Structures are given as C-alpha cells and as structure tokens.
Amino acid sequence: LIQNPKTPLAERVELIEIFGEAKQPRCVEPMLALLSAKEPDAIKKAALGSLQGYKDAQIGIEVVKLLPAMTGEVREVAESLLVSRRAWSESFVGAMAAGQVPPKSVPLATVRKLLLHRDPRIAELIKKHWGEVQGATTAQMSKQIDRFVGVVLEGKADPYVGKKLYTARCANCHTLHARGGIVGPDLTPFKRDDVPNLLLHIVNPNAEIREGYESAIVITESGRTLTGIIVEKDARVLVLRTADGQRVVLPKDDIAEQAASGISLMPEGLLDGLSDQEVRDLFAYLRSGQPLNERK
Image (cartoon, rainbow, N blue to C red; front, side, top):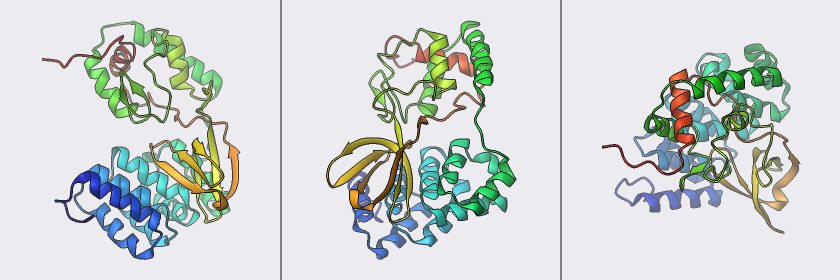
C-alpha cells in the first residue's frame, strides 16, 4: 500500500508514520526506496520523519547520497534526520569534506546542530571547512536592521510577489491570515506595521523568544539529538515540534538529557540572498492588513 501510487495519499502517509513507530528493521528498506523514487514531497517528508526512529547506519549513507537533489521542505527534513544521530552526522560531514555536498549549501543553523554531538572528529571537520561557527554580532545585526528599514520604506512594492516569498521562506513555521504552519507564533495579530521591530525579530530571532516557543535540546538513550519546542508532556512521553514542522514523540524512559537551548528555532539569515526589491515585496505582504484576493 505504501509503495502503490494508487493508494490515497493520506493513507500512504499514515501507514509510513506507523512504520516509524513499528521499530522493525524490515521497515527501513521500503521507506528508503520512497526517497529515490518519483514521489510527492509529502511521501518523502513522511518517510524521512519515520526513518529517524531507526539506528541503521545505512540510512545516513543513503540520505547523504540523495541530499544534493533534494530541495525545499524535503531537504530541511533530510538535514534534520542527518544531524539527529552521530553516525549519520559523520556521513554528512564526510560528504561535505569530500565535496559531494557543497558546504555552502548547508545552513548555519544545521552546522550548529552538528556540534551538539560533542564529537571531536565532527568538530574538527566543521572547523576546517567553516572556521569557528558563530552568529553575527549584535552590532552587525543592528547595522543590517538600519539598512533594511531604509530599503523597506523606499520605493514601490508588490505584495503578491511578497506572498510567494513568504510562502517559500516563512509559511512552513508561521501562520498569517489563517494560512501557514504552527511551529512559531501566529503573525496575524502581531504588530506588523512597526517595521524596525518586525526586522529585529527577523534579523535577530534570539533577541526575544516568546513564552511557549522556547526550544529545548533532548538527547535520548537510543542516540538521537533533537532540538524543538516541547508541545506536550506527561508521565510517559514528551512531544517535540521541530523547526521543520515534525511532531516527534519520545518515551520518557528514552530521554538521557534535556535542557533549554536558549536559541530560537527560527534561523538567522532569512533575508540573505534577497534583492532589495524582494525585501520590499516581502514586507509589503507581511504588513498587509487582510488576505490578498487572487490576482486576475
């Protein structure tokens, strides 16, 4: 049923998620096969999410091979998988060192997660290819905010173009006008006409982390290292929502360490690579007071 494209998409995704809970080694091969086949993104994301529950070193090797061809949300979930276990992270870093995965294609936030393993070999390779991994200083961020304030407030902007940019860069985590993800706060009631304040939260997401959206680092007895927002917990399980929107259920007896990360799940550099006009367009949509009608 999982491998049959005629099976309804929702049913396939549900069955893949069950495979993730089954923890049976024979489930690994059919899920890996979905990643190399011509499948919808929803299927690939579900398979990558479910594969994270398995320890098989071959998973990391296979995902690393496929990573260069992955894009968008599928790529984000694949990187989350690769940084979650030490053996997979070693395969990931090794591929970057060998040039199989261009180091510049890997976001800084992902590189930082690799360092959470506290593995000397991984740390050495990262230092060799990235140097000392640090974020921008507050002074640099302030200068960037000042420049963007001028960019946003000058010239004409197209909110319809901005909506497309928002969908690609922000909607996976944030809701605006009742559309989008729930990893971060709903932006609709946010004071979005205050451009400097809006830029502060985008350029420096760690400046103020809203209550209820503090991220945690969880290390499990079975060897996983995860970061996310704790959305549920009881005497038996802890539920994390990760930056790529996955809901990860962890048995309490499998948790070895848990600590506040002090870092927002929202990555820095979201405006990197945008032209000044694209920044203006994006903010025209972010500042819109109501949903846009479809352009005729």
